[in-house]
Image 1 (cartoon, one colour):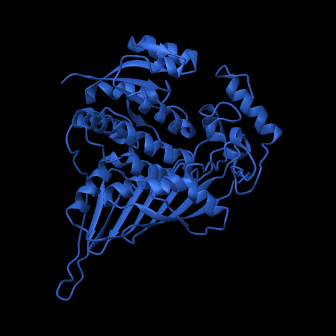
Image 2 (cartoon, one colour):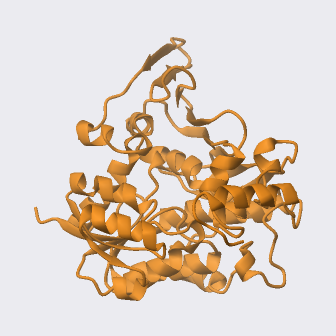
Image 3 (cartoon, one colour):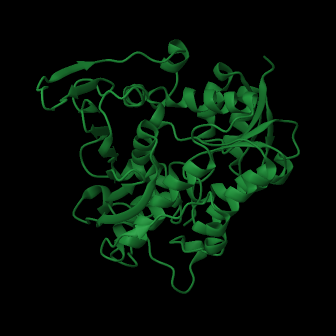
Length: 412
C-alpha cells in the first residue's frame, strides 16, 4: 500500500510518532516546531522538511497531520488543519474550552476528514483484553468502573519538562489531564459520561516535589462520572505518591482488572454468576496476547499504545471510516476535565456533560471560553488551584531557574 504522508506539529512528543510511523504504513515527511534546536535535530535525523511557521507547514505536500503541540492548544490548530484539507490525529486533550469543542466538531463535519484522538491508554494490552471480554458478555452488564493514572515525580523532573513559568504543566488544573484514566473505561464498555462531579486534592507545600516547584496547580483530582447506561465511574489522576496505571470494571456477572503488583499487564478475571441455581465462582490471572502486530507493538512506547494509535489512524484514512476515538468521544472525555474543575469549585456539585454531536448543543456553548489559562485571564476566569492564586516561594523560583538554565532557558 502507498504510504500515508504525515507531518508532525511538535518535535518533542512528536518524535514518538515519527519512530512508530513506518510500522503503521505512514511516512513522516515534515515537522513543525518553534524550538529551533529540536526542529533541526529531528529534521536532520529523519531527512525531512522543517518549518517554524504552521501556515507554511500546511503548504507541504502531505495527507495528514499529527498534533503533538501543547496540551491546551490542540483544537485551534486541528480546525485549521482540517479546513486546509488534512486528516488530523490530535494529542490529548482534544479541546481546552467548550467553545473549542463546538468549533472542532463542526470542522470535522464540514470537511469530512478523519479526526482521531491520540489517546494511547485504551490500547494497552490489558485494556484491549478487557474490551474483548466485555464485548463477549463475560462479566455481564457494566455497573461500576475505575480508571487511575497516578504519576508522581521530583521537582527537578517536573521542572525539566515544564520549562518557563507559564508552561501548561505549571498551571493546568488537576482535573484536566483525565483522558488516560477515563478513555480506557469508555473504550472497554462503549459508554459515554453524562454527568460529572469533581473533587480536588489541594496542593501540599510540605511535599518537596511541590515546595521546590513553581507550578500553581493542585496535587491530584478524583472525578465521579455517571455513564449513559447508568453505571458509575471513578477517575483518579495526578501526582499522588504511588505511581500506577489501573483499570477496574464490575459487571453484574463478574469483575476484571489489571494487576497492581508483579506485572501490570496481567488480567485478574473473577466470574460470580450468582443466580437461583448457580453459585460457582471462577477466578484466573493471566497475561493476555496482543491482538496482532506483536513485534511492532513491543517496540512502541506507552505499553504499545503508541503503535496502535498510529495503526488505527492510518486504517481510518485508508477506509474512510472514522476511528473509535473519533471527535465526539474525544470531546466527551476531554470536557470531563473542564466541567470537573467547575464542579470542584462548587464543592463537587453535579454538572451535566453536553453532547456535542447535537448542533443545538454546540450553539449553546460556542462562545464558552471559560479557562484557567493565565494568557486568557479575564473577568470570571478561574485560577489553576482551588486554593486561589498561588505564588511560588523565592526558593522555588531560584531552583526553577537553575534547572531551566541547564537546558539553555534563561527566561521567566
